[in-house]
Image (cartoon, rainbow over all chains, first blue to last red; front, side, top):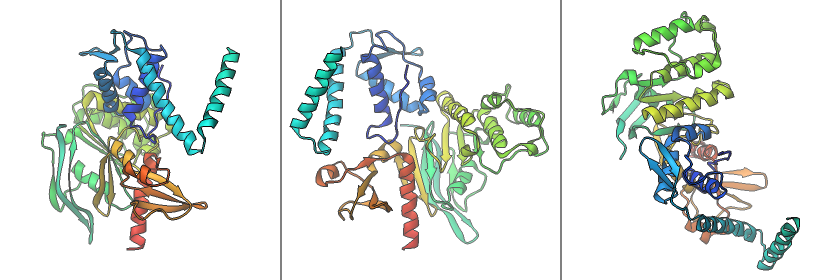
Length: 128
Length: 281
């Protein structure tokens, strides 16, 4: 788990990147409801992050309702039904906006994008 | 609010006729990780020595308001204060006695598997630094001042050392102050970045803020005079501009692509800008 890169030269602050990656773990099912998150110190050492950065990410995840902390025993993925679908939708939308910004900068038109989507999404279905 | 661990009040240091540290005042918080960067000769090491109490300022003072004792402040530089004729083992025992440590946490040093009967003066620069850093860590200092020594350790041990520092920060809320020129490995650790130039701090920002407020623009021609930049340099047929302070409204107003850059480039831009100023006052 947590085989990912966190990059200083990203428009997103480090703790935001970490939040994003943990949400990905939850959506993809690698982290399940009731699973324990790695201890702050261990994750900080693994990713060479300031422990405060990890703590800030954990704190934010908790305040957004994705995780729960128990005093002295760490952080856990919430047992309450995490709204996976709405989380997934909002993350897809974020990624979509980033993608759109990039291709529009390249001069792609709405027609280009539609054509590409048609081509690749159809291909994808053919494979499966 | 974080507790202040070091309170620097109007510190000035002169060496010969030159003012090296020029009326610096700032506070450093408990558990903060701070990076100090700046051109050669800008006063970084001298400032660090003031924090460590190795030199006394000519004016102003350095106060540890929570009564941090000298034993809990550890300064590490390339001038290693080790006893040359001691063996590694003797040095460790000495250290243990002086600092009243019941047990020596060898940590990183154990990882290196060094022969403890060797004399200090026979160790290589990297080995000495490693020993010095390990001794410092075992003390569990409240303040750890590291003056540009990390790069002499090999990459494997450097990683182990970084992990040990992170561990210490979390366990003991140690304040870590790094003076460094190479950042790739440590760039995600400092939360606060200070840039020194001619004895003063020209930047004192949260790393996160700094990352948002400094952007790079690569342009074929001169950029709009409305965009503030601290440094520019030719890059092939283009010119690189380091825009600071950048505001998000600039992305809407100007047709440029404002790119995020890593800490290394941010620092290089500030330092480069200082040299340009020096050449064309």
